[in-house]
Every structure is written in C-alpha cells, then in structure tokens.
Image (cartoon, rainbow, N blue to C red; front, side, top):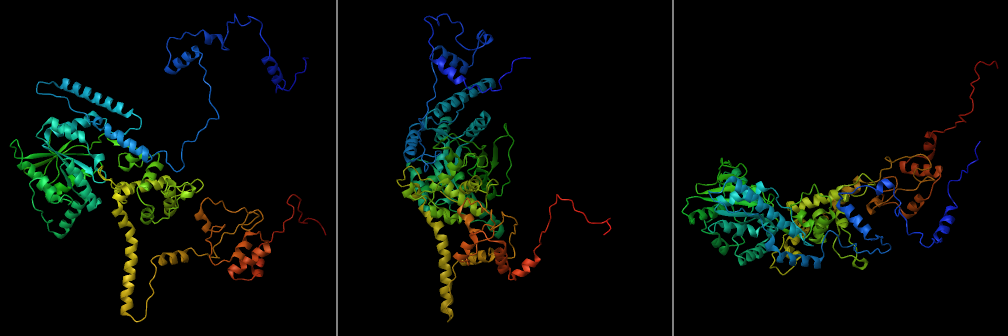
Length: 625
C-alpha cells in the first residue's frame, strides 16, 4: 500500500518558493554555456525555415533585434465629443477637405480610349485599352491614399467604359444629365475635356434635371455660376414634362408650343431661370442639326449621366412627346440604344455610369444616392447630416414630431443629433425593437433617408460662388414648410369670420388640434370593465409588486397595469394606489369601479379551503359505523 497523497493541489506554498528563487544569485559564469535559452521543445528549435510570411518575418526580425513589445496601460485619452458625430466633419475639417479637393480636382479623371486607326488590329486595341484602364485605376488608387480624401464609388468594369467611348465617338452633342440639388457632384468636368480631345467640333451640353425642386432665386444663382464658367446649360424637369403629357392625353389637346430658339445661349440670355418643356428641348436639339459644321442633315445627341438622375425619364418624355415608339436599332453592340426622335435628331442612350467624384464623408454618398440605403450598415452619420441641414421646426412640422435637444448649458449645440431626431420619429410611427421595446432608429433612418433622396424634404446645395450658408440658401423652402400650418389656421379664422358676419350668433372657432385630441381622449379613456386581473403576491398593488420597467418618457402615460392614465384621478388617490392594499380594500376599490357592492364581489369569489395534499384522505366507505 502506497503512501497517502495530499489532496491539496492548490500549491499554497509555491508563492513563497517563487519569491525565494527570485532573490537567488547564480554563480559566476553560470550562464556562460547555456544551450537552451528558450523554453521550447527540441523539435521546434530544429525546424528548417526556408519561407516566412510577412508577420512571421517581422516577429523573427524583432526577436533577433532584441525588441520588446510592451503594452502601454493607463494612458487612455478620450478624443471623441458626445455632440460631434465621429462619422461627420466639423466646420474646420470640412473647409480643409474642400481646399484639398480644389487643389487635386485635375487628378479626378476618367479612362480615355487610346488612339487608334484603321490599321490597328483588334488585339492591339484591346491590349492598349486594358493598359490605359490599368494606369487610370492606379492613379485613382494613389489619390485615395491621401489622408482625408473620400472618392465616390466609380465604375470598375472596362466594358461599360467602352460603351461610353463608342457613344462619344458616334455623337455630335454630349448631354450630361445632372441632379439640380447638387449639379457639381454629378457633373464630370474631365468628360467635357475628353469630348473636345476626341473631336473639337463636338459640343457639350448640361441638362439640369429636377429643376422644379429649385426656387427662382436658387436657379438664378446657379445660372450665374454656369454663365461665369462658360457652361451651356438648361433647366428641365422630367416629372413636369410627364405630367403635361398625361394631362394632354386626358384632355385630348397638345401642350402649348413654345417659341423656337436658335441656340441655347439665346435662351439663357432671354430667360435663364425658366424651366424648359419638351418642345423647347426638342427645338434646341433641332438647332444643333441646323448648325452642323460637317454638313450632316441629322445630328446624334448622346445622353450620359448617373443612373439615378432621371436619364431614363427624360428619354421617355422626349420620345413620348413626339409619339414615337422607343425601339433600338441593331448595331455592333447591344448595350447602348439609338432612338429616332425626329428626321434630324437621333438620341444615343449610354448606360448609366458612376463617374469618380469627391465627397467629404460616406454620409454624403448616401444622401446623394450613390450608396444603396437598404444595404446601409451605419445610419447615424447620414441621419445626423440630414438633421444638420434642416432647422428643427421644419423637421417637426414635416414629420409631426417633437424633438428635444440638449441645452447649450449642458454642452449641446442646438442641432439635433441622430438619436434625438430618429427616436421621436420611431415612437410616433411605432417602430420598436423586439428586444426591450426600444425605438428602432435604424428603420426610422431608412425612411428618412429615402424621403431625402426622393425629394420629400428638399435640400439644395449652393454654388461655390454663394457667400451664405446652406440654411440661408434653402430658407425659402423652409418658410414654405412652416407656413403650411399657418395657412390652415388662417383659413379657419377666415371662414369663421365670414360665418360670424352672416349670422347674428357668434360661432366659436375650433382649434384644428381639438378634433384629434377629442378623438384620442374618447378612444384611450380608462374603461373599468376591461382591466387585467392578476392574482398572487406579484399582482397589481400586491405585496411583491415591483412595477413596470420604464425606459422612455412616453411610457409614463400608461398605468402599471397597461391601461391609459386617467387624468381625472386625484393626487390623493394616486398616492393611495401606490401603497400595497389588503384584499378587502382592493375588493372595495374594484367594486367602486364596477358600480356594485363589495358583498357581491366577495360572494362571487372562490374560496380555497384545501387540506394538506400529502396526508391520506379516507372517505369512510367499507366501514360499519
């Protein structure tokens, strides 16, 4: 039988032994002939290493150099401000970003097709195109490596750019269709240079679509900017053109024809801020055919633009105005289409292209419609940017919400944050998370961002020559939103005044909100017959009742049992309800609510006189008594 072993495996005395070994000194020369400096197995030390990864090579070099990597602790420095969204830029950073973009705007190019002639073989042309495209990709990659630069996602497929090259070669006039809310973001200045390099006789034209979202003063500012930079432009609205066509089809009469113009310069000089219709745009295209320098009887108009600026709706409006069916003519490629608009005008539709452009943050890309909203992962940046571009009262009137911002004394800036804007929106719409019942701010952000992109809430960027701020540039839009409710109240007062003058008895003017308040009061009133009855100590007003968990202020409108709070209840009754009541007092309060006597409730209640179930119960049958 062996010796008894100790069951204590904790090693309580090892700390003393380790402390003793630390103070032990080695003999002189004791570490001179050590052959195992590392505590590693022999098979690890004798491995043959011929190739290493970058990380292994870095670690081995650092180990040979006797470099020690020690983690620094207790040096935490908080650099994030709670009021400043980390996904957005402040005013100083934004100004610096604009300055860098202005200095490097010449480097923002598009791929150019290499020179070729009839002697160039297809293999050589394809090789030259791939080489030119690769060099262009490298130049953009070097531009993206500059700190603080955000380049928009651009088209990376060579085949799509080949369609653009073919459209430019076939067309006599290149029309860039841009969004009127931010024209410079969608306009490619290098494309206009490339068109002139291909053929100096080709002309550039800028079609500012969605111009109905701009006011007259805003169109005047942009018209002055375009004229100062010698840009041939025209304000247009495909939506208004489609509505005019639908109206003409219903009434059976054509839209009124405008006076024909010779050139766009004459039109801009006469009335530069007017929104052109379909007839005026067709006349401008016909004027290019009359001024053709090469003696051609017809002109080809190439339409180029982003996929989301209304290019397709513009083409459909032009084709529908002339009652010409949209059909593609057969050609060498199947990607771009040619549409016969008139005997002298042919449209050449290019596939939608995303040109490289500058942006301050990723939030700008979302609001400009470049990044898809449904695939958005970070929503606080775009939502905070929307909240900063509109006054608080405009957002409150548009979405019928109340936004509570942090006061300036507590460190607030007066501008609603993403949470302060999205939480009331989610609560009013009923967007709640399944976990803990918190407002679903991500779902609310998707709705708000889609409203911004679709034009429900309008924000137009000012031109670079505008000296004011963006809020001042859109002040007229904001006044129109805030004046809606004022006009409704004014009409109510006007109608009431007319009725008062016609009748002798004065009529009381009803507040527009009183109807909704009365409806809410009648619908959400407290009904004593519909209440939740919970038995046990954890029931309402029970001894172990802990109350409901309240996360938000709007939950305080309900009682603890889930019923709406009765405004007629007194403070004494409310204080009494907060105390645990006995069974008799609770029965009396329930009888008062139901309007019956307490004896009736006591008689209808079930009494449980049960004995101990563990004891054996005998019925007495089988015994002679």
